[in-house]
Amino acid sequence: MRRLLCTAAVEKPLDEFVGKVKKPRAPNKAKVREQLREMVLSSDFASATASHLVALYEWCHEQVYGAKPSELDAGDAWKMATFAAARLAKDEFGGEFQRAIEFVRWTWQREKAREHARRTGRNDSVGRIGWRLQFVTRHLVTDYRIDMARKR
Image (cartoon, rainbow, N blue to C red):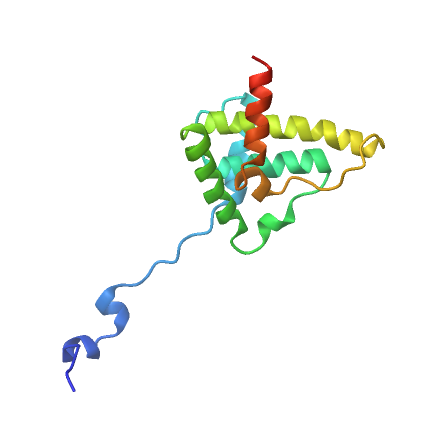
């Protein structure tokens, strides 16, 4: 039988041989939320990133529905939502996060009116906007574009 590794490599611990693998750090959600708060207060979103889009979604969800979207705290959901937000910004808004922010703003302006109608009994629809509907599916993007075209 052929030996694939030299004796020296086998005798050294693997970490010494290949180096330690660094675990990816979890996003600092508290820091991103604070940065978003400052952006909202100043109306300056020039430095927005995909994480800020997720934090904006989370904040709008809580403001409109009165409940935090707890699914973002489960496992890697925040990372997945951030990846989806980055892809949405890239694919649908030319990588311009400020344009993606306008889309999120539009989404929640519309949803706020719909939620008000639900609470006053004028709309009996159920459901809510989850992060996947906001960032993964493109239904809302199409609605946004139709609404923008109507306003021209």
